[in-house]
Length: 269
Image (cartoon, rainbow, N blue to C red; front, side, top):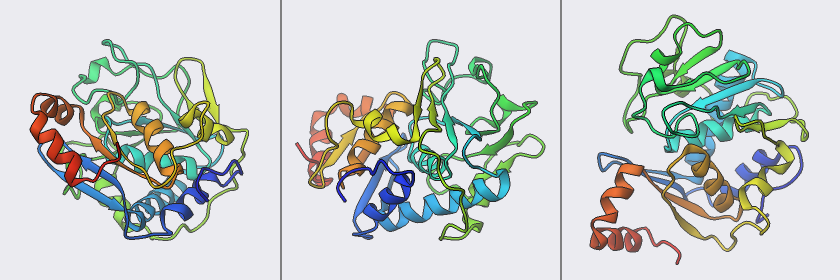
């Protein structure tokens, strides 16, 4: 299989694809402080499965459940998005005040600038739990540092600390409800939606996914751009190297360092 299946179990198909070569890098992340995180196919698969189990066991995630992703462009955003889709739930990307166009675009946006979605959500996955204190949705606090084992900060009452909770769940998915291919996979927050059976077309547009194991560089300025680019490359049996916006800006001023990164990561032209 070299592309996303249009069957209801599309994310399961993607997981089967990335684990055919379990030791091969699939997601490599360069963070703001020079941190480098590499997820092989097997490791990415396990992260997705653990997160699926948390979503299902804690929140009954299934078709019709709405999960808002309030994370910046980050490797953890990829994991939570894929896990949400694997449960058949809807990933919500809501408008934000302050000039940015999607929740999670800029992790420096103050709590007061994080607008609430127009429609209610069931779960909020966020690196800013204090911004959602008082919401009716159930909260999941996600720490962003690479080695974080818990969220370093105050948590609203009832919030789940993903840093410690995710690792307690099994590496294999216990149970998920069958995905409805016509159900909404993405609520873009602007009145438009993408169904589960159109995720591949959303990611690739009018062309097929990149094929041949391409290793691509992503420099997303928004979380939605990160997810689109990642789906595109993974669906073609490829892999991604993701730069945080700060890292991307730094390398733009240092062409030699950028060239060294391209060579060391063996990026495709």
